[in-house]
Amino acid sequence: MGGEQAVKIRKNNKSGISGVRRVEAEEGDVWQATLMTNEGQKRESFSIGRLGEEAAKSMAIAQRMRWLNALPVKHLAYAHHAEEITRQNFDHQLDVVADVAPQVQISEEEVIARIAEINARFDAYRPPRLKVRVKSYGPARLAVAVSDGGSPAKRKLAHVNTAKMMHGGALAAAGRVREVVEEIYNADVARWFAKEHGNALLTPESFDPAIGFNVTVWVPVELIR
Image (cartoon, rainbow, N blue to C red; front, top):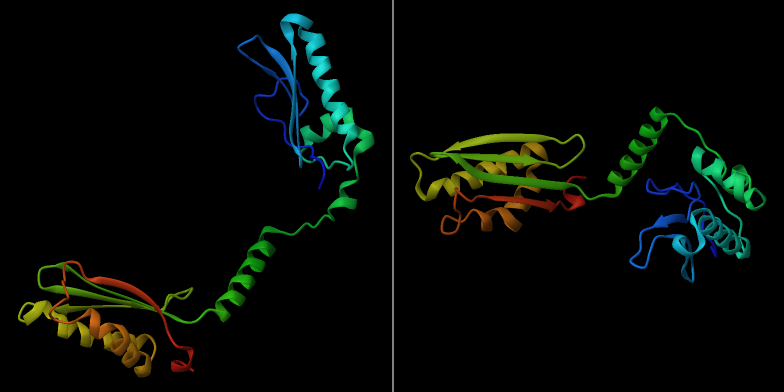
């Protein structure tokens, strides 16, 4: 688009005309006209001290109108106050809104339903996920949390008592993770996770219950079909 749309008037605008404002400058206050185009921003100031308040303001408004009249496109106004001001000054340049953007009115319930449909369609193409968190939240007690990351998600939380176990219960935790993953998905996914991730994360030499781990992985689709 080669021109500028009529937009909402800024709160600090004192002229009532978009793109025309009073500016406090070092050399003295001015009324300033601005217009943003594809070629960059146009800006011209008119000294209040030299021309007077009303003359400077009128000249700034006139300058902006000259710029707008020279634009090769028409303008679309939106918001009630912006439309009122625009129709006062640029009525001959306006297109009917329906001609520019066809009006579509739908209820909030329909908006929510459409978003849910889009999300469901997206989820259908997304590979299944597996989220596994193992961490100690108290003395001799490991928490094992597993989820499929869906919406709504299938979740399972289990605990492992490590009071009488060596290595902080890493081996017991590995077995419990496998059991819970099998409950969320199946035995094939449980074996796959143990082989690809779980066994390495829960080796007795490297697993620290106080730090634990929290991972999310994509599950091969063929394992759950």
